[in-house]
Image 1 (cartoon, rainbow, N blue to C red):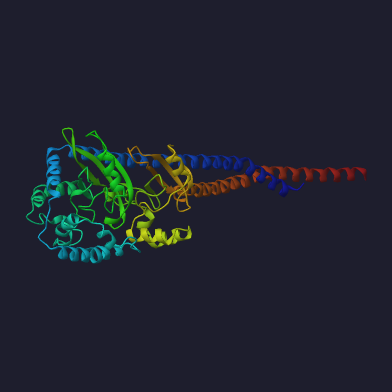
Image 2: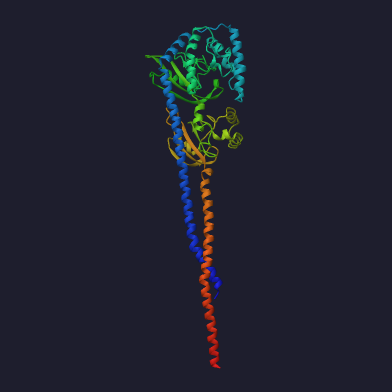
Length: 465
């Protein structure tokens, strides 16, 4: 009898009996753990989505309360009335030639130079904008912008531009508005005369100051839209939010506005407008650009998207790897104009398109968490939902690369494979020892029987002889 074959068969049988159940158990364990880790990752993204979504909703809720509260404040009502009464009587000491020369120099050199630093092409010439201003508007811009001794970006430091009555009011009210702006982080605060649409007061003093939002160069902007909505209101508690768009006076940076009517009893005396603090929105969404420190890993990010499928906040990948971002969007077919705007402004807001399965569902009103390709063409775990902000159709997306999210699963798989190998080795050793213990006695018995058979045969032969 071939006991070596029996030995091999016994080893194989033991391996089959021992290893197969272990392999099946481990396969089930990997499958279940993969699903559990996926659910855990999506749950974490949902938690982040809700936390950030709540922060953004609270930010807008706070801003809405601020603009309504401020617009009904007696100080603001008084300011609106006094600025309005004296605005149209404003006269500077400079001659018309001095005004035109100084303003032209400011528009074509200081403003245009700064504009070109962050924009590839100047679509609207500075002079063409200046030519649309009335003599009154030019006088105010001369005293408070062009002839203002403070450098560009610090024109709001001027307290008074002359002895005029309007300037006296500016000296009285400006410090309070300036402090309010700095305290709450707004880009600018305006008071607009409701009938003519003239910006009769501005903290920051950009090129829109003193112009008319009804007839002037910015009458077709989202700023004018915010004004017109509030000017038509008959309710002092009304607030209107207008979405972000490129804004020429702010060098084409993204700008959005909050507006509320100013009433003196039942009389509309002005419109109060805040220019949204875009930087504060980014600060919330990016956690101060500290993605790794707050637990987003290497690829996690949370961002906002508007109804036009364009971002309303900053992309992590632009901040952390600008060359890599540039290569990625180039390969995806982004136009050079859009890419240059993003790189020059260092923001993806109102430029980076995110038309994914998730944004489509979120903008349709759905709330969910699932896996799909993001705006980079990379598969991500994503949790999304619409934001509850009156006047804005924005959604929030909280995402992490699927590959990074599955790293824990891959680590578990490697660990289980090592354990499986070890288990098979142990089973093989056991099978080898057990097979020898079984086949050894059988072989000895066979040998003894064989020897006995030989003896009997020999004895039989001897008797026959």
